[in-house]
Each structure stands twice: as C-alpha cells, then as structure tokens.
Amino acid sequence: MVEIESLLDFGVYVTGLGMGLSLILAIGAQNAFVLRQGLRSEHVFLVCLTCATSDAILITLGVTSFGQVATLLPWLDPAMRITGAAFLLWYGARSLRSAFTSTEALATNAGAAVPVGQVFATCLALTWLNPHVYLDTVVLLGTISTQFPGRTLSFALGATSGSFLFFFSLGYGAAWLRPLFARSSAWRLLEGAIALVMWAIAARLLIGD
Image (cartoon, rainbow, N blue to C red; front, side, top):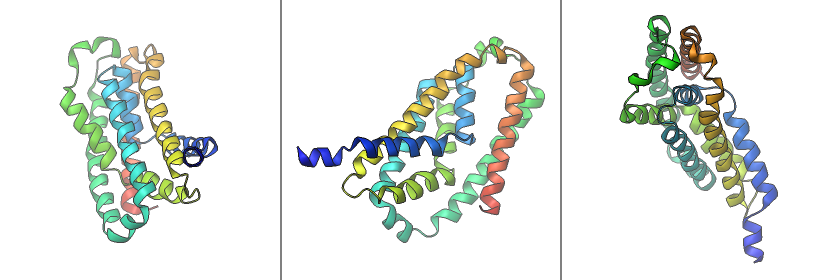
C-alpha cells in the first residue's frame, strides 16, 4: 500500500497536469489542425485520439529515457528541424492557397470531406515531424519529472491527462464556433491564419530559438 501511494501521488499528478496543459495551450501547427477538423466535424475523434496518444508515447519516453535519448542521438534535433520545417512550409502554402480560392462556407461543405487516411497521415506528420513536440514532451517534461524520484508515474499520468483533456476539448469545443464559420470569409481568414502559424513555426525551426 505504501509503495502504491508513493507511485500515485495526487500532488505530483496535478503538477504534471498543469505542466502538460501549459505546454500545449499556445496555438501551433498541431492545434490549428485539430481546430480546423473540429470546425469541419471531420474525423474529430480520430484526430484528437491520435494527437493525445502521440503525446502520451512521447511523455512516457521522456520520463523513462530522457538522458539516454539526448546522449545517443545528438543528430536528431537538427534532422527534425529541417524535416519539420519543410513539411510546415508545404502545409502553410496549401492553407494559403485555400484562403484565396475557397468559396465554400462551413455549412455547405458536407460533400467535400477529406478521406480519413489523408487526415490521419497529416495528423501524424504534424505531430511527429514537429521538433517542438519532442522538445516539450521528451526534453522538458522528461527533465521536470526527475524532480519527483519514485513518483514519475504520477507526473506522467498527469501530463498525459492534460494532453487528452486539451485535444478533445479543442476538437469538440470547436462546434461552438460553427455559426461564425458558416460564412466563407471567416473560413478563409482561418485558413490564412493557419498558413501564417505554419510558416512562423517553420522559420523558428530553421533559424533556431
């Protein structure tokens, strides 16, 4: 009983929850994509589950293997930066094109759903090709977890809960914004904003923080 209580510490769980939420609240490529899918009501559950599960895997990796990963793979950071930036530049260009050419409002796009395979592949790319996801989960959360020896399980569960709470709230909470995006002009503005977010992140990856 004592061992279980030491592993499942509620205070450490709350700390992990708060840290997990604070790291993903800012809008980014992944969050913008989740918001877009929520507004379109397309494969929302799959997108939210994919993002949250990916975070859970990376958080676990960070909490259990942070030191070993940083030592064994010194080339991983620059490689991820270049690959992620290239993908974000392409995705931003696609969103910008949609911002200028799209004439459909949200309420009229029922017949234009994107195939689930394409949505899933894009979601994986935005998650796993983004170096900041690794820096936040593997590096930062992995480092913070070392402050709680013997209670890292509670910290990891808290941070993972934060990811699930955030992504599902963002994906399904987007429904409240649908009346606004019933106008094609609002949808084009969102696509333009997404393009700017993608390019800004790509620039940060190439230039360095």
